[in-house]
Length: 389
Image (cartoon, rainbow, N blue to C red; front, side):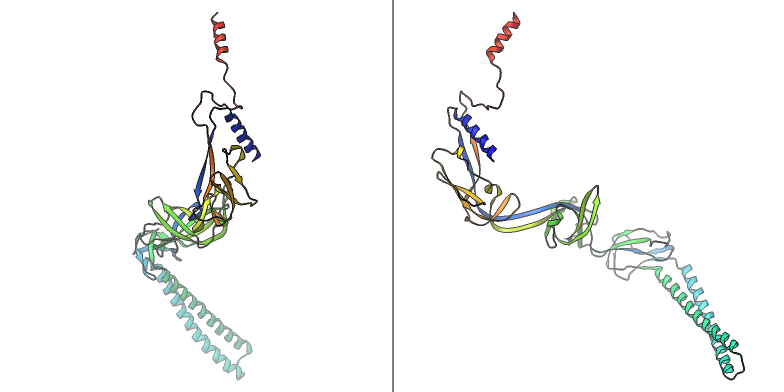
C-alpha cells in the first residue's frame, strides 16, 4: 500500500511540471437492492433414476422376443421366452424320480412297521429291526431330495419366461431370437428397462475444491448440447461420500434431480451444470471494490478534505469537497458484490475508484522519469555528417 502511494505521489509530482494540472475524477455507485449469488460449474451425465438390467438365470436359446427398443412395459409382462424343451425334460425326469422315491418310501415304511411288530414280539433280531428302520429313514430323505429337485426344475422352467420387473421403457435390447445365452458365473443381460423417463437425474463430478459448498436442496440449472437454447432446472438430492481419483484429480459424485415432463432429456446426454451454493435475494449491496476504496491525500483537488473513521470495514462518499468514511456491517459476498447489513441506506452513492487524466496535450509533455529518453537529434545529425565526410 505504501509503495502504491509512492508511485501515485511520483506521478503527481511529474505531472505538476506540466502547464495544466491533472484532473482526478471519481466513480460512485448507489447502494441498491439486488440478488447475490455464488455458484460452481461442472459437467455430468443424465440417466434415469431407476434403471434395471433384465437377465436370465438359465442357459438356452432365445425362442421369442415380444418387445423392442422404446417399448413401454408393465411389471410382470412377458417380454421374452427361452426354448423350454430341455427344461421340460428336466422337470419330467425330476418328477419321475420323485414318484420312484415315494413308491420306495411306501414299501420301506410298511417293511419297517412289520419288523417293528416282530421285534416287539421277539421274533426278529435287533439287527434286522435296525436295518429296516434305517432303510425307511433313507427313503424319507430320498423323497425330500427328489421334491427339491422337482421344485428346482419348476423354478428353472419359470426362469425361461422373462418378465418385466418394473413399469418402464425398454432402453436397450441385447439379444435377438435364436441367440444362445449362457448363464455361468454372471447373469447375461437381455434388456435394460428405465422405470420413468419423466423423472431423470444428473450425476455430476464435483472437484474436491468445490465440494465443501455443495449441500442437499441447493438449486441447480443445467444445459445440454442437444437443446442449447433451453435451460433445465433441478436440485441437489444427494452428495455421495465415495471419492473418485483420476490423473491425481479427486472428484465426488453429486446427484441432481432433473424433471423431464416433455421428454427432451435422454439418457447419456452430457449436462453442463451450475450449482448455486449461495443465493440471497433483494438485499442491500454495493460492489466489493467499494470496501477497498481509500482516498489519497496526494491526489486531492484543491479544497478537498478527508473525514476518516477508525472502523475496519467502511465505505466512502464524496459530499461536495469532503470525502467521508461510513462504517458498515457486511453480510455475504460472492467476490463481486457484498451485502450491506447496516451503516448506510439505500441510494447512498459510494466511491469505487478514481482516474487521473492530464487533459489536453501541452507543448511540453510530462515524461516518465523511469523510462529511457531518446538520443539527441543534434548529436545524430553530427554523426551523420561525419559519416558523409
